[in-house]
Length: 319
Image (cartoon, rainbow, N blue to C red; front, side, top):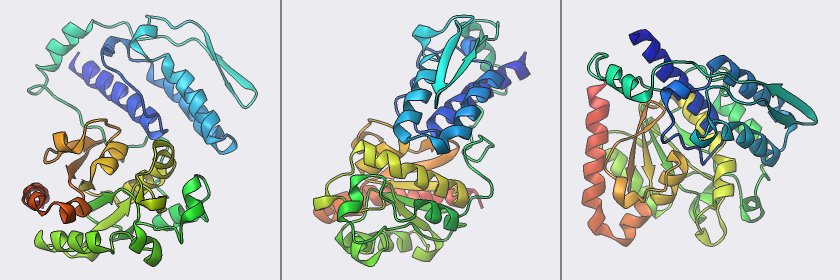
């Protein structure tokens, strides 16, 4: 029974990881019972089919198709047996009948979970084999795939694409929002006044800038330094996640409200979650204020330093 529960939890979390890795932003499983988790093999069959065909589909079409699939996983649509459903991809129709495992209800499962090694919570790792990321991926390959990117309107006003930089084996990664004027001109993230402050923060943690990995959600400067909109962020986020997979940091510091919400797929404001470790598929993430905000309000530097001490202590604990 214990192993069955562990497998149920692993299957459910892996299914969620599949969906989120494919770019689904609004995937909610509140109220979804473990007993109603879809059969792992059937779920993989459909997702893998979509992955195989994704190169031939536009982003919009792919999202519609995957959304239709995931709609079946919502609590309101779940039964012990799903009715036969059709998902059309590129003129071809996939038709299957999905069956669910017949196990005890959630109250019984919750009770049993608490008895497994003092309430076991299996960690989900971004680095597990989820079929979307390749072990052969490299930073150079990611840059090659980005190319002279024109996937969103931000390319129209940029001077150049600002790629992530730093140690590709870093234990610590910093993620910001998007390039500013200095970054757009020089082609490197965090080189303006905010970047200089970030470098001081890194050094105060006992590290060198070249020892960490630094990037942004978006690689092109938005006009007037406005925030990237959701569609712009979504297009670029995939490449950042691939970089995270390659670098495999032990911890990520996400800087500012916009980067925090786009990376973690949360609507919680930075003021509510800063200073508290979040989980990004097994990676510790520390949300904190953006250095640019600290330049406007130096009184917040103390709070950021407290956050960075938590990060430093966490990394020290892993040595």
